[in-house]
Length: 436
Image (cartoon, rainbow, N blue to C red; front, side, top):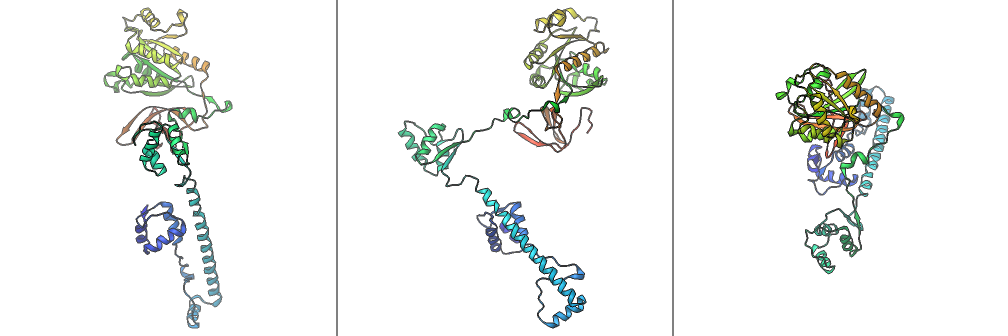
């Protein structure tokens, strides 16, 4: 973008000529310092195109005129014959006509710009736009009247108000009616209900089986990350400070050729909000309890989050390989916390495991697949992606990085995304293994 004055200097033309051209093309401006948009510059450029020279062997300027026989003879010597000269002149004439037609069509095309602008509410339109919380001053400005007049009218209605007082729609409607205008209310869209208002109903035939999302929750150092470590047969605990998970992490494994997505949430007391966020996006929650430590404050909190999420719960009693492990006592504490085990007539599956020796891991995974099959988790891959941002941070090298759980659809590089009031575009994607 540039000003009209800058453009005139750039094309080496008088600014008055550019202003006249703006008038003829319907480009709005106030003075020579007005800014031209990229579209305006394109319009002007197209109207200032110079006729290109012909190829070197057929160069002939359309502005040159054959004024006498001597000049024509020189052209004959240059191009070889009068027939060839006539051919060149015809070619130039045709090109000039085509260019004139093109410029005329281009000019007519851009005239629609004003028609589009006319859809915007004009200054003389007979209504006033009302937004929630508008003040007396706002209404006065919209109608171009003195706010003191409106204050007098309000007093006559028994309403004491100053210029900064907010007006309800009903009161504003009365004021506007006195000036023979109509009040139009604009409703604000609640972006918090974006997924409800704009969600697409998927057809049954478009749905395919998807991986269940499993969130592991429990008290700090009860073995959540060690359990994932055992499942993935890798060692990620050593990379965390003091063996305590610092952020939400997600991983995907395959068991019996079925994908399962795991979310590991921090167990420390400082991460309550993160645990609640993890519970909201899950299909199945595993509450892990150490057999040598029992139910602790974060265990109870995890149980509360699990119940609030309204999803199936599996209790994993970990560290059964320890000498001081007490399975029965731990089971009693779990029951007192509000989860009734299946073996006691309840509906909560309980697995005894050891993340260290891998005992009971396969039985736990079997129960996950069983619940997943019963619940029938499905998604439509052939639609726009919708999901949840688990966590986000800013990296000095790569910029904004977000851990995203795609719950439906397919996310691709280059896709625009919106999260609350934040929006952007996908520049790169990596899975839990760091692969692009």
